[in-house]
Amino acid sequence: MSDLNTQAVARYKNNFLREVEERVEEGDMVKMCMQCGVCAGSCPLGPHWQHSPQKIFMMIRAGKREEVLTSDSMWMCTSCYNCIVRCPRQLPITHIMHGLANYAHRLGIAPKGQPTREFAKTFWNNLIKKGRVNELTLTLAHYFANGIGPGIQIALNMQKIGLGMVLAGRLNPMEIFGGHSVKDLNGFHAVLAKAKEIEDRKKGFSA
Amino acid sequence: MTASIATGQTILVVGGGISGMTAALEAAECGKQVILVEKTPTLGGRTAQLYRYFPKMCHPTCGLEINLRRLKGNPNVRVMTLTEVTAVAGSRGNYAVTLKVAPRHVTENCTACGDCGKAVTSEIADAYNYGLGKVKAAYLPHAMAYPQRYVIDPSIAGTAEGEAAKAACKYGAVDLGMQEETVQLNVGAVVWATGWRPYDANKIQPYGYDRYANVITSVEFERLADPHGPTGGKILRPGDGKEAKNIAFIQCAGSRDENHLRHCSRICCMASLKQTQYVREAWGDEGKSTIYYIDIRAIDRFEDFYQMVQKDATVSFVKSKVARIAENKDNGNPVLHGVDTEGYHRYATEHDLVVLAVGMEPEVTGVKLPDDIILDSSNFIEGSRDGGMIGAGAASSPLDVNRAVQSATAASLRAIQVIHKNAATENA
Ligand SMILES: Cc1cc2nc3c(=O)[nH]c(=O)nc-3n(C[C@H](O)[C@H](O)[C@H](O)COP(=O)(O)OP(=O)(O)OC[C@H]3O[C@@H](n4cnc5c(N)ncnc54)[C@H](O)[C@@H]3O)c2cc1C
Ligand code: SF4
Ligand code: SF4
Ligand code: SF4
Ligand code: SF4
Image (cartoon, each protein chain N blue to C red):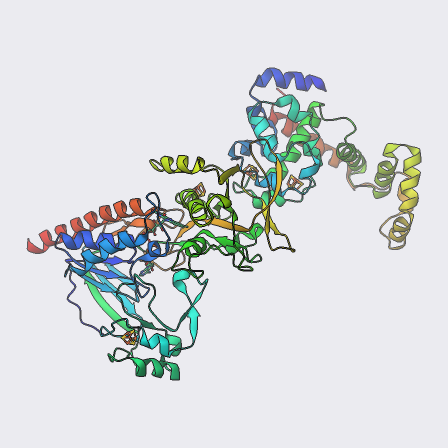
């Protein structure tokens, strides 16, 4: 995994902005930021994270690769889109935040144990298994992410909602036994493999 | 319907602001025949609505007075107020223009004695003060109005109040029967000096101009500072009439913004720097101005003015575009939220009053112009492809008065060239 990181460092030297432009979703819009501060002041999570989008974009330009990619700031984005609708330059800020998070994850240097990242991983692993999200196993995996004790506690707290969903036909208890898959599971996996191949080629991960 | 002597030798100037007056006078003083049309009841445009103007901080009276004197002494310019262009047909050297003249209900006999105003009680929004106050429905637009003639608002023309105004006039100047007229003219060249208007601040939702009484625009602030304004020159905030001493200025309100006006309006940094000096003039060391900005654009020699303001201890600068404004319900103070770019500090700062430095948008935005007029991406007028129509002043670009006058002089010269070529072909 960190092989990818070493390769990236060798490839882009000190030009982190170029790396972001080529490898991060919508990364080529970073240079359009005029540092006005509207996104930073508009983000509801602003007070709770270390680097606002405004600051992240400046850090990218200043070549602070390590600090940006290992930061948990972009993992804090809730996709509320407040920043996007207000940005005077119409930067796709939300997409860039997620793009950076995804890229850091790809390189294997994203913060370990960051809850959003852990949930995203759980969600993804659940999804690719059968081609559809198994809500029951996903929920359980999420509850027990912090160990058995807290897991049981959350499960008990959420009991009523779970039961209501079962009664309403929104949650099938039988899904615990693996659950059903999409019709053409092999086809689905082939699609994912192809998508990854294309992405790797486009972003320069493969030769 | 008035017959007109206008010909292919005549220049039509649309818009009677500082640019239109300049373009008209420059051509007239070269011996050309000029018709100057203005849609409001008076010449002067938006310059007349400023308290003082940068960089010399003089009152607009001086600049306008000189132009009015030139105008009165020149028989080559015919001024038509309350007049709009409704259609232009033809091409360079030969245009047929249709004008619509709205009724003033007051004739040339008016001496501006004011008796009709006293006889009337109903009031209308005061356009001169950007609607911040009211005027009688029989009024003189402002002290410097040209022509110095009253206007009787159409809303009272057919009423008992209209009759009262007529009865009060000793000079027989009130004519309640005046109707809208259509006038046809032939001209050789058209100068478009239709100017600008402030960007609609209601559209900038996070700033709450529509919700908070103590958030106003820069053009309204000009009127608050002016002794001829609605507060007699006292800086009192609209919400509760309280003295506003701690004032925030928000730059680029609607400009340099893909969601609003894309362009930099170019004068608003200077306008706010100037307005901090109104605060100083009103409150001395007790006043406090804070300018929130992305970057200060004081072009060319205006840099001196910027440096002068920077030295003023009552003025501070925060490098940040404010993200949103909330209101402190207890005292009506606007609270500014944002993050500053020099250190990324989060702030929530209260002020007595917020002035939005709104952008300049072309007055003709949304108006149907002749087909062959070329506009830039922000709707500023460049002119017609064949050069017979020319944009001038703030209609052509967001310009300060000095640059607007330069632009108008250049436009006038180009119009004169069109007329000359015309004369040459007519004589050949
Ligand atoms: C807050 C603020 C403060 C400013 N302060 C300063 C300052 O201190 N110093 C400075 O140099 N500049 C200042 N400016 C800029 C200044 O206002 C402009 O440079 C100036 O008004 C330009 O004059 P103009 O004649 O081109 O346009 P305008 O003043 O807009 O005049 C245009 C005229 O055309 C008329 N018109 C419009 N459409 C039509 C039509 N269709 N038919 C007929 N007539 C029409 C209008 O009624 C108006 O009378 C300031 C601007 C703002 C926003
Ligand atoms: S709002 Fe847009 S232009 Fe302003 S700092 Fe954020 S990303 Fe940059
Ligand atoms: S979309 Fe993300 S970065 Fe943008 S304001 Fe919302 S939480 Fe903040
Ligand atoms: S219309 Fe008559 S009464 Fe009114 S100001 Fe003019 S002269 Fe005086
Ligand atoms: S002049 Fe200043 S306030 Fe006006 S748009 Fe340009 S940068 Fe913004």
